Image (cartoon, rainbow, N blue to C red; front, side, top):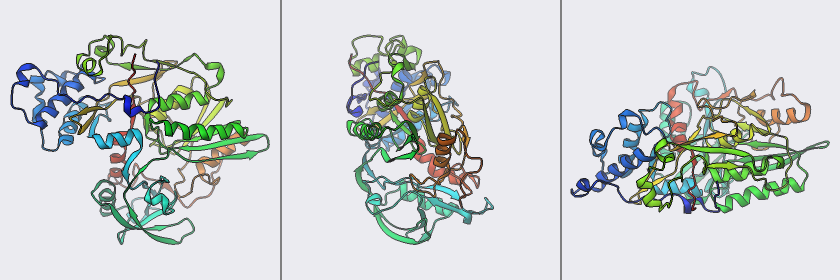
Length: 483
């Protein structure tokens, strides 16, 4: 399937008008009602499971019952009611157009860091034993510019201690998802010292490559890259290529890719990444294919066809949506190691799944990956709302999809969120390096004060709240082609 680069956002579907029957167009509908109409009718056409009986007809479904002065809530409530009909769909949602643009391009306003809870002592059911670690920081953010690092503990927020209790979770939710634009944060560094920093939510562009380095052990040159998001921009591709050009120039012959906090993104970027890694002998072979609902595959998509000005009816057919490998650069590998967590999702899992039939792939991590074989493209409504109904799934060259339960690690080991990137004593990285150097994973991982991470909490469901809200938009974003 031929695609163009660089900017995914420029090529995504922008569907702004509200499709309605003539008798519906004649009424004096409010904007929220029109958003509800549009959300229903577009979803009914593109939704992967669009034959579910509960979706019904416009009249039986009555989309306007979801109309609300909050346009995003209108679309989100409606699509979640459809999502509830399909247990496999934990992903369809609606967000603001501004949020959608940020997901695609990485350009937007945020704090630039995240938190992940971990147990520093037992018992696990004591909230005082939970601490909130910084798993990553974007360099261009205010936090990044002020030196905040992975492995630091967010100890106090505006003077209040942050632990594993509900009040702490509420404060963190308010910080990341509320209206605050500044905060005073006390951090505890790995050496035990504290530092208080006044932080601001600022506009910046995310850097997808958080860290890279090369380890040398005899004849082995081991490249290590932390890749945090599959942005659909030329700048993101340039960053990725620059790292691999350096790896190639330094003679790298083993590779560790750290995707532990990568929630996914552009399939175009996934294609490029896979083509850097794949053996040259696989060029021309199938990488993966998209599968849409039968209505789309059979050429019956009048709403999307009109908006995209598609001249033919095979746009969504399997034959025109099959990707093949096309090797780029000269990196020659027979195997690759991935560090993963439950936050390794979507395009990250697509990359793993596509490489499994053609390379030796090893996974290292604390838990299974997220488990998302499906994806979507945003449908914009009234320049305010981005609708994300699950619209397709992907299968690799041997017909295998990403399992909904996620990929299980070959080596289960704690995610060392108390260690900075590149620290060879971090348990996941240490195991990858040991396997490369000896042919075996470590029998005993390096000593650590961290008992376990608790993003899917062993304490209680309340610690899930932050991660659930962050992972709401995990995604594989499909790029539309001009043929």
